[in-house]
Amino acid sequence: MITKMLIEIFQAIVEDTQIKRLLGFYTAPNKQNTDIETLMNELGLNAKQKEEFRKAYKDYEQNPSEAEQKYKYKYEPKSNSAFDKFDAYYQKFEDKAKETGDYRHREYAKYRNQSDNQNQQNQQNQNFNFKATPSAEEKKHCEALEIPLGTADFEVIKTAYKTQMKKYHPDKFSEEDKKKHAEALSMRINVAYDFFKKKFNK
Image (cartoon, rainbow, N blue to C red):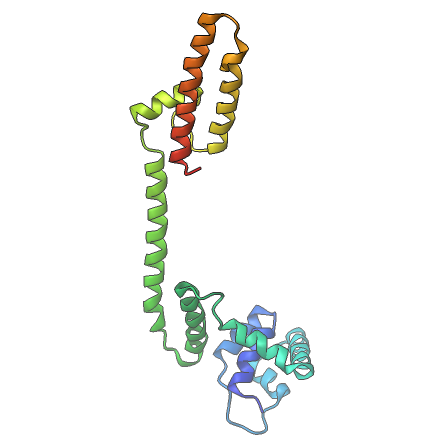
């Protein structure tokens, strides 16, 4: 006997999208004599689709528990996230709506979309704030490290720091005045690097 659950299992395991759609609209009849061939005829499947459907039915008969797991997973949340749970329930009601014509669950989907849009907007705002006009202090530190204003890649800053320290390390200079100048520059470079480490939480 072809049951409602069996229809949903077939919909989960069959690969042909057209068959999936037809199964979604199919209402399982309460008839004891409905078999797989009758079902395929009622769905209006062509020869190729019937062959694929028979294969799916054979797979189901050989290992019904595996097929049921695929069906079960279809409606299981991917994680404990509220959004994943919503998506799982939404899919279940979406499949059910193909039978009943009741699409009220779609009204709730807009809240998911609004939340996604809000999260995206927040991310954009964070990016905008991150790229906002640098302060006078940051400009000074960028000059010390000889990097462009608004540099957002810490690895670039780290490389610039190492380059500048090699260039201006006091030990490289033997003349007293040049050594003192290098010490002052090295101090500025270290202060600048500390500034960016704090900014990037490094």
